[in-house]
Image (cartoon, rainbow, N blue to C red; front, side, top):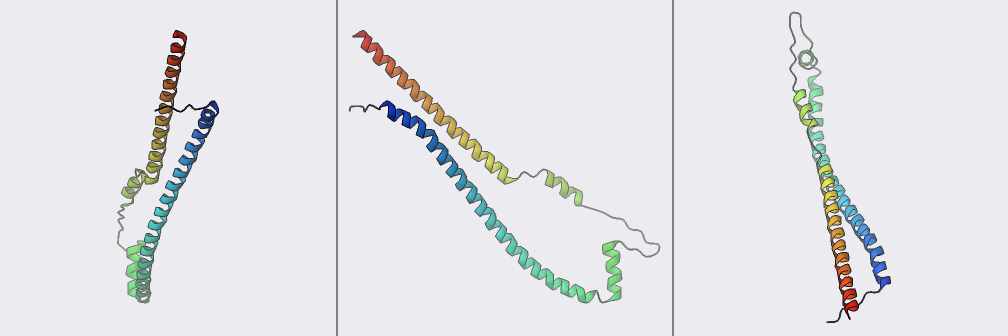
Length: 156
């Protein structure tokens, strides 16, 4: 089968358009991925907000019952001692807290989206590296073929 000769203008066109097309495809892929991530986050947020709404409706019922309880003076006195650390004469208050553990756990959490964006960038760089290597090998092959053609022409 006869090989088609590629003209210099066609080669120039390819060398100019190939990186542009690769960048455009990369940009579109990145935009698509970020849009999908945003939709996923919004879907999760919607589910969380619906759950929070049902919880708030339940809380409103509890608060209405709490209002009726707060009209009793004995209940108000006990409530103040439990929640606001009021004491009677001769009583002592000892405060125990668990907030420190939660703060330490929050410091070491890594956000998933940063990991995802890092992986996307890394994979894009790997693909870009492979494409560049492939193009270099192709250029080297073309140079070898030209040398062989020149050496056969000189030998004749």
